[in-house]
Amino acid sequence: MKVLITGGAGYIGSHACKALANAGYTPVTFDNLSTGWRDAVQFGPLVEGDLTDKSSIERAFQDHAPRAVLHFAALSRVDEAMAKPGLYWRNNVLGSLNLFETAVAHGCLDIVFSSTCATFGDQDDVVLDENTPQHPINAYGASKQAVERMLEDFETTFGLRHVIFRYFNVAGADPDAEIGEFHRPETHLIPIVLDTVAGERDHVTIYGTDYPTHDGTCIRDYVHVSDLVDAHILGLHWLLDGKGSRAFNLGTGSGFSVRDVIGSANRVTNRTVPTNIGARRAGDAIKLVSGSRRAEDELKWTPRKSTMAQMIEDAWRWHQVADYRQ
Ligand code: UFG
Image (cartoon, rainbow, N blue to C red):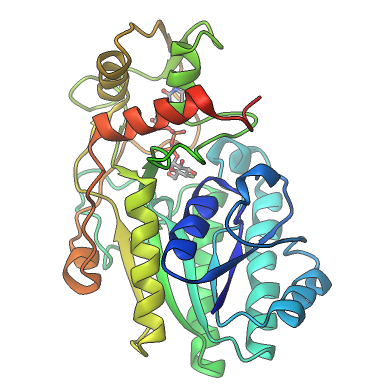
């Protein structure tokens, strides 16, 4: 059975392709290679195309007739969204609209959508579960919230059933070190810390040490990419089994500050990462930690690898052998 993976050349999408292939599906990657890597497409065919160009999506559906779609493709940098909100609305919202319209036209009515905890905004001391009102504070979160809403409308009219996953911070790499996390430019904390350990950067700048947290730095809930993509397979099965549309938060419920992450990287790599203290980064929420067990209870999802040490260990292993980082 073919499954279309938009963004399959990216960090999370490529891990999803591997998990799908292992589960017996053929993952067909649809990607414009703007932030993804051709070399990360190792588990099924690649269709090069852009979601803002409807004819290229049409071609993918005609050539491959996918049974379902896992929709990862999106721009996802908060700093970029703050500087270029229109880019985020065009790419993430228009791109999704083109995808959903084409899927409906081809009778492909099962979609797993990658959303984000950024749709919740900055809600200090609120338990973030699936019923928490969404108040995004940047165009990235707002664009993802808009697509969530679009899915509801497409379900009402066309029966497009969907599973929405709201990711917290995804980290780690394939435990076999075949694929991993690599962005140019890199903005994510753990890859930056590991670049520094590897001597590719002089230091890590900590963006703000005056937040109201235990050590003054922002807190995030990190989930291992392998655990995250396992949830996507369960989400796909949920839809293929005919169950109704549902949103799930994907986090572990444990919060780690920036300094906690750097301390863990020091221990795992047995080095001391040089740090500098910088200003707060625009658009950053103070604390984003999932307060939900819905994915565990309903999807029977079990995050097995999402300890900070394991995520850094797997990311570090890949970092040292990764060929497409060269
Ligand atoms: N940070 C630093 N220094 C760095 C990089 C990051 O101090 O060099 C801090 C950030 O300020 C933040 C934390 O480390 O407090 C985590 O930052 P990341 O950039 O790794 O992750 P974000 O929480 O900003 O981003 C994640 C996803 C994004 C998504 C966002 C939504 O990776 O794709 O959540 O909130 F947009």
